[in-house]
Image (cartoon, rainbow, N blue to C red; front, side, top):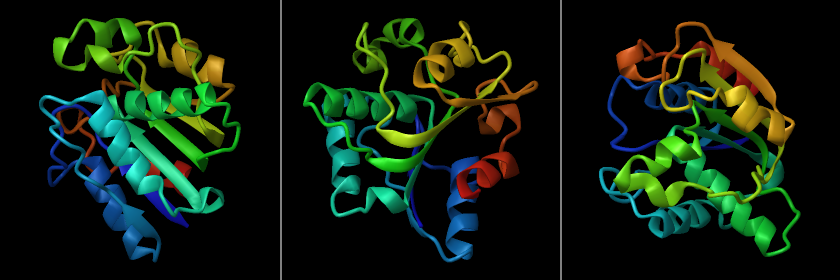
Length: 185
């Protein structure tokens, strides 16, 4: 199994973040893990992030790929999926997708550095066979509720983390066994 882990805005993949922990756990079990530093995380450019994600997908067998995104990484993946759909591509880019603490379009539009990541009315696509949305029950970056905004339109499984916030280090998420379990089941 191959895993692609996509970080969020202003994330330089710090020690202690659950994504770094997840990468280590997966590698320790013998999985192939790609955890790239996406370009300019403090001033991201959508097309640069999309190109980096597409480069990671090149030569990867979608049937053995699980993608785990957090925050702005979710938005970037959804743009990749929307662009694939706009090109008429109906094939899955991954077998499994975990959208962890996805950010809603109104919130994205309110942050000038990431406003371009909003889908702005484009249909939400996943480009994956099985989708799981994981969010805190009071995530300030998706106040409308990730279940309604993401899980329902995608027909995805929805997992709520009580008291989870945005599921960051500051919210107490270093090791995150729930995501490891969801990614490997």
